[in-house]
Structures are given as structure tokens and as C-alpha cells.
Image 1 (cartoon, helix red, strand yellow):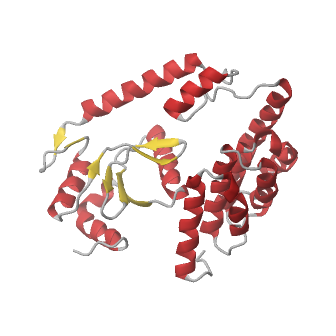
Image 2: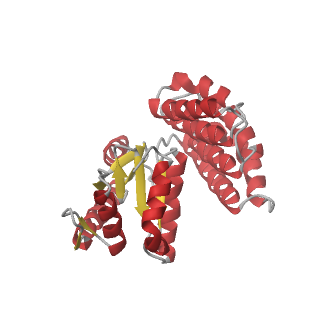
Length: 297
């Protein structure tokens, strides 16, 4: 649905919501709450996501819950509902009064599947947070659910921006190291500028960018939001655009693809997705999509 806001006002509000979410300043919560009244699905989605981030930095969780629950239950767009539910989950025990509503939402067949799934997951997490608060447990391992000591939390949060017990920390560290080694091993195809890539599709994209004089970074690490680090196939710094080549068709790969696409969307990033069937018309596709972001050949 197109926003009824003027384009200039809409873009300013989008930028402001992103800025507030990244600020980590709990004092910005009232401004974000006020943005929920703006008639834009995108602005509302970014605002509820930003509220969840500020709660993690110590913003008033009860005030956040009061603003988020109506959006979770009655948001104008299902994605806004989904992000509001996720933000409620971050409010922990402060959102325990929302659990019955979230359970009802999870059982409501008229809701989108991803909204229902988010509601069920959030209700479980909030109930556990409420129990932990009564028991005096401050953090739990996000992998196995065990109680996490202050030292374990500090170590894992510094390394992964996650809460892990020592056993799971070691497992995750090893998994990520092995993954990165495998990625480097898979870079066996050389593009015309000497960049080693992992597939013919990526080679085609790299060589198109080189031929058109567009600077890019391949497989570089970026932390686009506080909780997640990503490795986009291509990042174009002059245009602030990300290009991902989705070259596989396995269920596990598709799940990872959808999650990554959601992260880009959540943060308002400029993403161009390229699929194997796009390669015959790659020149037309990239030219048209990059023009939207200020590229003029």
C-alpha cells in the first residue's frame, strides 16, 4: 500500500526511524512512539523495530509495551504486526500481561502464518522471562536455554551480540570459523578484475560491475543491525546498494535467503536480488534497478 504521506516527508520519517533505532538512546522512545501515528506502513514497521532495540538499551519497557501491543494486535500491515510482536518479546517480563492476547493471535486463522508464528514464539519467550524474573535469572542461553552467568553473557555478547553459555559459545565459535573457512575454499572462480567468487552467477555480476565502472566490495562483513552481521555478495559503496545472488534452490538455502532478505527490509537497505533465471537479461535488470538508486550509465 502506497503511503499517503508526501514522498519527501515519508523518506524523512523513514530515515529518522532508522536513526533513532541505531542511536541506542532510551530517551528517544517517546519520539518513536509518536511516529506510530504516521500513516505509513513502512514508517510504523521501522518505528516498532526501533522501539524494540531501545528497550535493549534500557528504554522504559512498560511504556514500550503500551505502544507496541496495539500495533501487534491491530497493525495496518501484517509485517508491522510481526515486528511489533518481536519488539514485545524484547520487553521480557514487562510484557507478561500481553501473553493472553498473543496466544489468541497465534490461534487466529485469519492472521498470516508468520504473524501467528511470531506471536506463539513471543508468548513462550515472555512467559519464560517472567519466570526468570521471579527466580532472579537475568539471562539465558539463546541456544540451549540454560541460565547464563554475568561473565558468560559479557563474553558472548561482545563476540556475537548474543547470550550464550560457555559450552554453546564454543560450539557457535567453531561453527562460524568452519563456515568462514569453507566460504574461502569455495572461492575458486576468478572474475576479470582478479576477484575470486563462488559461482558463475557471481562472476557475471562482478564483471558487469567492473565493465560499468562501479566500485564494489565482495563478500565483506557488515553489521547492518545491532544483532546481526551479514556478508552480502556485493556492496556498492558509491550507491549504498547491496546485491545478492541467490543461486541455490534447497529448502535450507531458501530459509536462509528469506531471513536475510527480511533483515535488509527491516533496516531499510537497498537490496537487489538476482536469481539464476535473471542472468540472460542481467544487463537490463541491473541497469534498471540501479537507476532507482542514482546510477546513470
